[in-house]
Image (tube, rainbow, N blue to C red):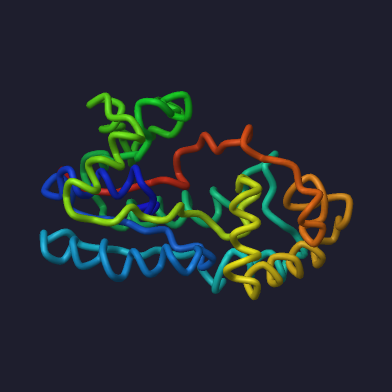
Amino acid sequence: MGAGVQTTCLLLLNPKRYDYVVFADVGDEKPETYYYIENYLKPFCKENGVTWVTVKKDKYRSLMDYCLKKNLIPTRNFRWCTDKFKIQPIRKFIKSLKSKEPVIQDIGISLDESHRANFHKYNDKFTTFEYPLIDQKITRKQCYEIIQSKGFPIPPKSGCYYCPYAKKAEIRKLHAEHKDLYDKAVEMEKNNKQYPKMTLFNVPLKNLNEIQSLDDFTCDSGHCFVWKIGCR
């Protein structure tokens, strides 16, 4: 469960399809995302008999905690954060199910973003990936419409509040609405052993006005937008 638009749409479309909703909590989502999870997604799952499971990286409170202790930062060039804090905890949970058949895992990628889907890359003996939104030809715009038609508010954009894939507008919004979190991100970046040569964006985060638009960057692993793990 990424807790964004596409994954929320999957939940509302067909909750009976799922045995588990698995949220890989990196510990650094924006407060609005945690609020949406607690007040909309978890109650909906409970009402529909779907088990909510939260998984985390062992030994660390959050991705930021890991970065501070290791003197590094997430980067766009090498997505180790997705692997360590999302893929690995989710796969650990999958293996704990001890299913005799590969577990079916839905990825919340819509039709208009189908270029992000790695249809065969991650399939293994434990997991089979499916893309219901692509199969049903549902676009991101239609996801908005489906969510609203079910009487739910549109979820805020999910993702770590300092994600290097963030857009400039998101960085400015964080600075304006959650200055404390922005300041934490600045300190994490400065704690990086390769600072200022290596930064979250193309200039140090403290130089907010110099950060260029990051609209051309996107994550294609799908795992930052994982929706569910279930057995059938």
